[in-house]
Every structure is written in structure tokens, then in C-alpha cells.
Image (cartoon, rainbow, N blue to C red; front, side):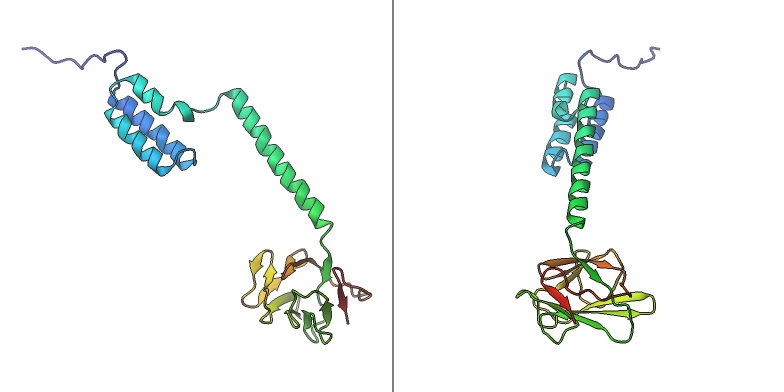
Length: 198
């Protein structure tokens, strides 16, 4: 009685293990965004029907893992990109005018174009009564007063009363302010970006 040995792999022929390895590599590159879903699906289909190792290698030739020089270059570019964003953020932070949060909880501070507001912002894109800041204990709350161009807190549109903190960014239409701790000693004589405090 003859005992069947395991089949001897034919050199250059694709094995099931090779096909699975290539399919996993394609899946990894697809999840990293280096392959579209359609390309991934088409290549996996080709991997399952590949007859040679050369056909399998061709499927991942354009998405192979980068070598050490390429990895170092990509890391340097990523670092430079984040450094650039950090520098831009720091540059803009010094140029964004500050808006002092209300020191007292006696009455809310209204912001808008009307001379009846506590903080008058002389800009046509700001509504007459645009927004309101009020202090509740040690917290500050920001509320949009139905303005036409909206109020944003840290880039998020304010649709209900939102808690604001020193250092947050408030946008009244196209104008941007950084909220600051109240200056209890003296009120500002002139608000930045053509805004003034009553």
C-alpha cells in the first residue's frame, strides 16, 4: 500500500498560502487608504485565480512597504507638515483679537451691531443682537440670539447654550475672537476688529 506524500510545490507556482498572504497585504493597504475598494476587490479576485508567484507579486508591486530611505523621507515630510500647521496656528493665535469673558454674573453680556449691546461689533455681517455671554458661578455660557450668520464656538455652530472657557475661539459670522479671562481691573477702551464695549 502506497502512502501519499504531501504535494511538492512547483517552483514559481502560486500556493494557497501565498494567495492568502497577498490578500491580507491588499486588505491592509485598502484599510490604509492606499487602494480603493474597487481596486481591492478586483485584485483579491485576481489573487484567487493567480497561477504563478509572479502574478501575485504584480498585484502588490505598487503598494509594497517602503524601504528605510522612503520611510525616513515620509516621516520627515509628516513632521514638517505638522510643524507647518503648528507654526501657522501659533502665528494666527497672536493675531486673533481677544474678547474678555464677563466678570460679573449680574447680567448677560450681549454682542452685536446695535448700540444697545454691551459689546458693539461694527461689522455689517454681525446681527444687531448677535450673541450673548453670561456667567453662571465659575462657568460662562454662550448663546446665539438668532443671528443671520451664526455664532461658532471652536468652529462648531452654536445651536443651544454652550459652555465657553478662556482660550476658546468664538466666531460671530466672519469675525473671530479668542476668549480671555475677565480683566476685573479695567474694561477695555476699544474692542478689537471694530468692536467696542459699553
